[in-house]
Amino acid sequence: MIAHFSQIATIFLMVAGLYVVMARGNMVKKLIGLSLFQSSVYLLYLLPGKVIGGTAPIIGAGFTVYANPLPHVLILTAIVVGIATLALGLTLVVRIKEAYGTIEEDEIIAKETPKTRNGPGRGGDAA
Image (cartoon, rainbow, N blue to C red; front, side, top):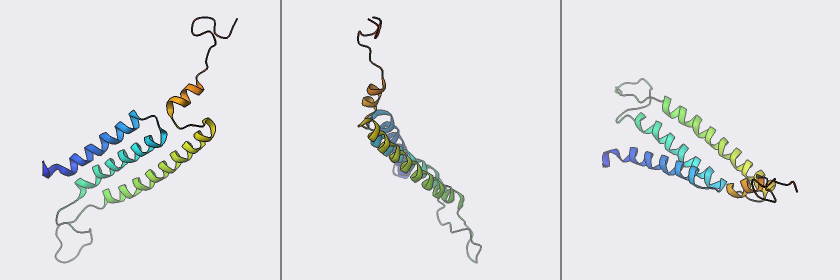
């Protein structure tokens, strides 16, 4: 169990992030869940890339085990994209708050749904 702690932590972060994105109606909470999910993906790529006893891939005397730098480079790029995505999402949340006065998904959908005076199936707005 302790040997697989990193995989368990990665799965927990992934499930927690996905749950927050799916279950919450608050848009800021959804963005936090998305960030949790992204962090779990970073761990998913980085943890298997660690080589015990490995060094940077610089050829030198006495080094026989080298670590692959590609996962680290990919994760640095993913972190930059994740920050940009979060910044864009927060900007959209601010604009939605200005337009609708709320950041709750249910309230926005209720404001967007046209309401009929007589109820459904009774002719709508026609008298």
